[in-house]
Length: 184
Image 1 (tube, rainbow, N blue to C red):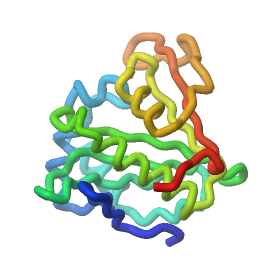
Image 2: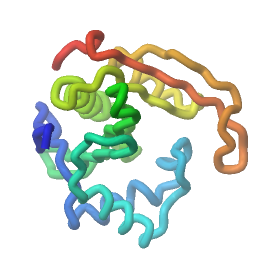
Image 3: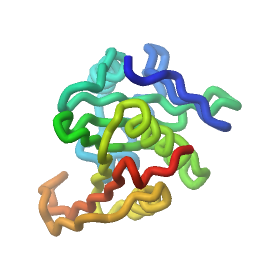
Image 4: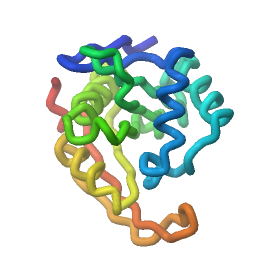
């Protein structure tokens, strides 16, 4: 693998998912508040099992549409606080995309920023990505603010470009280039 896991920060461990993470992933993916701005609706237990299997699979991160999703674990307690994902958006142009989903009870403590900064570092420094974007529903101001705190710039605001969950939604796109990334 061209990347090293697990990743340890002061407060967090970012690691591959394991079978025993099922209950935590179910709690995350079946919560309507969590999935409100995501591309998918709340998932059933069977759908979460499928989702967990995908997260546990080895991903070389060398071809379009591959994704590496890491469980974010609070080192002090061992609690699952959320997940971060790095997608290979375009391998030819060395483009990636970052995503993150955290349990609401852990919002506002900087865990998403701490974990996401490590995913950006991995993308740029270990996988050699040239550009990483973040795309989100424009109503998701918390995530937009997080991308700004990470140093990403807003490059686009697409007005009513996606029909999601029964309504037209705006999409924001943020981006960062490798030479703009400040190593952590």
